[in-house]
Image (cartoon, rainbow, N blue to C red; front, side):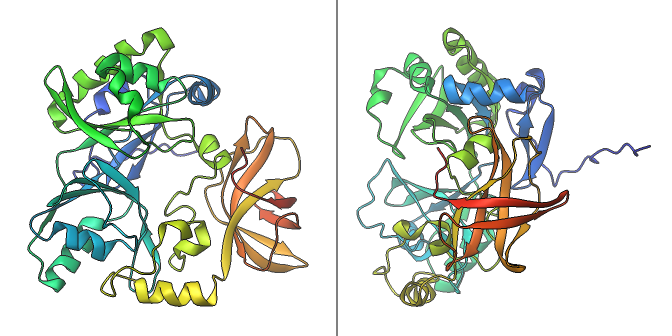
Length: 370
């Protein structure tokens, strides 16, 4: 008989401003992310998957916290933190960036949003970037305030998301470029509306700037989406792996550099020498990465559960890497995963994944799967 257990209440694990809304929608699971509870499902995984593929889904992604850089040296700190050239970044524009430590190891992959020359947000993955950014600012003697603002994103994702958001804000959003954003409001609710989101199906993120209005915003989106059969969801594991989307912390370890995980296009080696990690990144680029991220398709057509740990991959009884994430693909009808593999292993080669249920043959393929 299995023991029952519960997560003990603590202020260390915060609730999202949309928490009560997700409970009303029938949320069935959470996991911790940036010291907050992130919804992981609403009890209908098949329906939730096809909703993001064919329709429109709304996600509580308030765990996607913002780190604000605010002050005269905000742009200088942003460039020190980001090994990507920000000199041409305009107000209202976002850029995907790789934050690294001094050894060139990736420690986060946020979207940087430029609100003004003296104000930036880093929309972060799961890691404490506030403390890191504060330490760098203090060590460099910069005139900038670093803090977590009252900002909580609500994502609207899927091929019908644009129609839903246009019905709320107007057709101007149809001209919004990817990663660009604009400040607006609806019924007195202050927002930044961005064309972005953690799916390849298209969509928007509504950066709520007043947590007391979370339920009102949720209900506005829910009501507006009814003609398109909107429903609740969350960043979908199957869709994101099919689409080849990186999950920082799931697909990276404490030695992973951006070149190993297909982020080389987001690194500019000509940025100033005081950029954190740039000297190490130049060396890695010159010598070449030791690993690369590629797709893994496993033999068999029996669905397995989500892979929640790294699994060794071997060739000729020699470990050549790991499958870092895995899931059943509803469109491919195969178990698939992302692999972090020795650089000399090529697309099309076969190997063995060492699973808890035994060895399974696999093939390496290009990303994305779809």
